[in-house]
Length: 306
Image (cartoon, rainbow, N blue to C red; front, side, top):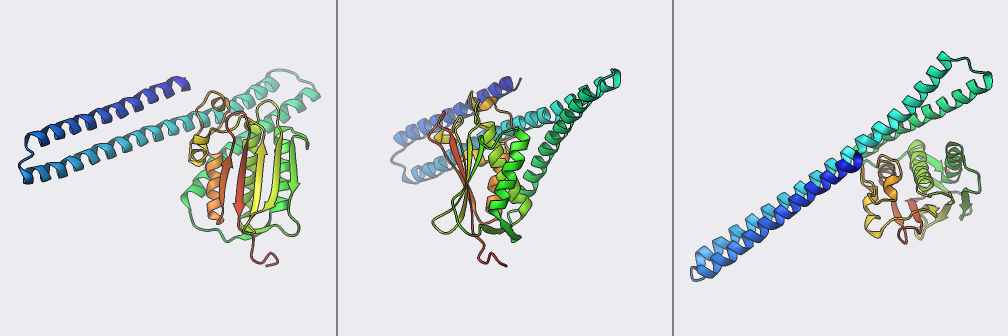
């Protein structure tokens, strides 16, 4: 269903682009023909060139805005489909196990197994809701966060521990490397920073493919900034997509990445949190099949002991 909707939207986008190009070509042909016929009439020529420029500018701007609006609607539709799936699936699972426990006699071991699955589904629901709320909060405010001193080393290790539990992974699959000595303190909002780091780790796990091998490094940059690098050996990112992936609702549409479920909010939240803390986030990849590295760069606290 989603692929059919996407195909329809792509045809509409191509239609509007072709229509805009045809109008521009027709306007150019008419203007050139008119200039050839009336080249001796200087005033009319000047006015014609002026009006021609205005018409072409209007047509081009209209086509650009129209295509952008179509693409924005496509992203919104994909987001709604993803959120619907992320909410409906765990709810259906919880209902199934509750009905089973209500209609049948199950032993204590099975009951505990069902309860654990339902708790996991509730956590999945809560995570989805938190992502949507966090995207609205961080996206609506661009004001710089002052916050409190946050120890990044402790925060990263806490996020890794949560990710290992959530994805049922061992330390060999989610590794940590500290590349700095001394304090690694930034000024900021602890909850927002935890969300950003967790999103980078979860993103690396989701796009790792069959075998998860993720390394999280804490290092110091050239300007004494603190760097959190999340490296995976997964499906990689095409060079043309490296900047687009941080936009709201944006998801890579190729055949491999398209199979990974998501709402297109995780990296947008990371980018918003980085900006609110005076930092930035960027991605690096050698292309599809060669893994990727995401770096969250944050300014170090001027007075860690404050």
